[in-house]
Image (cartoon, rainbow, N blue to C red; front, side):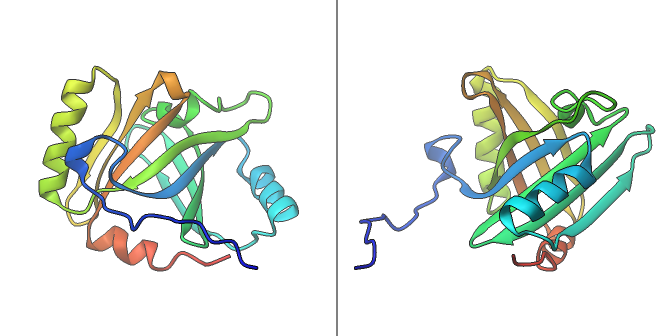
Length: 171
């Protein structure tokens, strides 16, 4: 007999709180991307990833790999240098190997919901890390929540990121 949970139909309402956007991503951080990818291949059978590597103006570098497994996106990120502290604070470059959970990713559906989120962030007393607003691509930020020992990432995708995410392989 198949398992039948009485699961509610999702009703996302950003005005209800920081966890009421659509949770779509589990993010991991590493300081050795090839080794982390080998672990995901050996243990979980995930061998195909969308690559996104970027050199940043301040000298930093970020490399991310993403894949869909079911309805969940998995991301592995490695960052070092200026502007990448959101990643390198958790997986220092040049240190012993690290691969660990880093964040839940939440989709924010529109600008009105982002405005609600900004008010919640301002009143939360929590530290917002790495806010970014790239016209035509994405609006995003990370929120530090020390009590749960990981970050929350909020993403308002725009045309450029939507196109890129739609190219993400399915495991």
